[in-house]
Image (cartoon, rainbow, N blue to C red; front, side):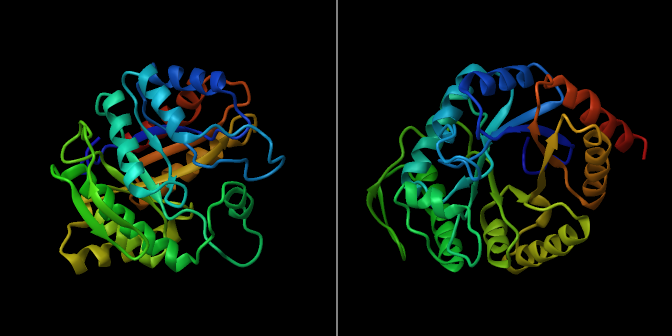
Length: 301
């Protein structure tokens, strides 16, 4: 998929919370054999966000490299990588390595990550457990912009370079080998705040909207269009993306999910990620019950 490709595309997301490597491996191998799935995604947290903190939560980028080596067709990525958990130069190097392992199939997903907010905050126990400081939302967004600039430069510069930012200094930074995709892997940025949408306009090929109602999406989409106009970028260059949880053991899930997807497609979303809680069902169930009926309805509109 390219930034200008406006076909509908569907992907599957496996949130690693409570899943074994074998279970995730099985889902990805199955999806790789089903043509309607074009992309697959992981979740980026070091510990479960709810329940027992000692529950399973495999690290996303290590796991992504393993899955890249075991699939042949799916585009793949992390939706979205927390910018707070890895230094950007290191993340650029990791992503370049995964793109090479995947023979050029990486979609690079990133977001601001957790920040210091009032009320219940699931990021607290994760960040405290791994010694990651919680910063203000404004600082988290500022760091995201800085990281996007560093990562793109790491992928583009042939010679070592220096970078002096508000929270990081690099001297002689270099990324070799580069990603296989040129000029770089597609960049997906998740978020809906005004400042994040400015970063989307500046850096993203795909915008992942982290909500569901189409009315709110349309308002945020207009903000993104305005940011694009302000910097002279065609907003049509940015693919609109969404993800939604599908609880496959819920008998109401197929109809409700189809209705939601059709609403969001009508609002302009073309890149759809199903975060599936399979409950023992095969991956083909998602294709049969949700994806193919949605495609058929869109084609007959």
